[in-house]
Length: 192
Image 1 (cartoon, rainbow, N blue to C red):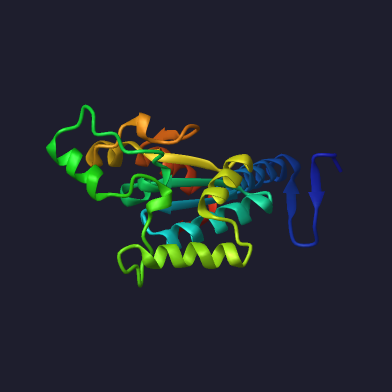
Image 2 (tube, rainbow, N blue to C red; image 1 turned 60 degrees about the vertical axis):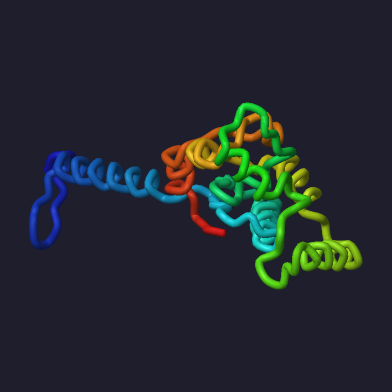
C-alpha cells in the first residue's frame, strides 16, 4: 500500500484529493472569517435634539469603554452637535437663514418633547447636573478622549451651509460611502 492511498471499508481515497478538499475548506473558512463583522459600533446621528444626542453619546462612550471601535456619522440636524459657533460671513441668503434658525452649538439644542421655548432643555440639563450625570459637552470630550471617530457628513455640510471653521476640531470629513464602509464592518449599527 502506498503512502498516498488511504483505504476505508467502502472505498479507496487518494491523499491528493483529500489535500485539495482540505485546501478548499480552508479557503472557504478564510472567506467566512473575513466577512465577519469587527468589534465595531457605527452610529448615524441625524437628530439635533439634546435627549437623542445624549443617548447617542452614552452608547458611543459605553461601547468604547468595552473596547469597541466606534464611529459616529453626523448628518443633517446632527451636525448642529458638532458646531462650535455660527458664522454668517461668506454665506448666501438661505445659508444665513438656516444658520440663524439652527442652534449655534451643542448648548442650544432643544429636547424632542416638552421643549417649551428652551425651558425643557434647561430643565433636563439641570436635572442631569443634580444627579451627577455628565453634560453633553463632557460626553463629547470623553468620546474624543476614548478615540470615538466623529465623522461630519460632507453633503449635509454643503446643503446646510455649514463651513469647516464653524465645526469643532478633530472631526473627520466623510461622505456616505466612507461611513458605509465603517458600517459594513460593524456588529452594531444604530440610527439616532
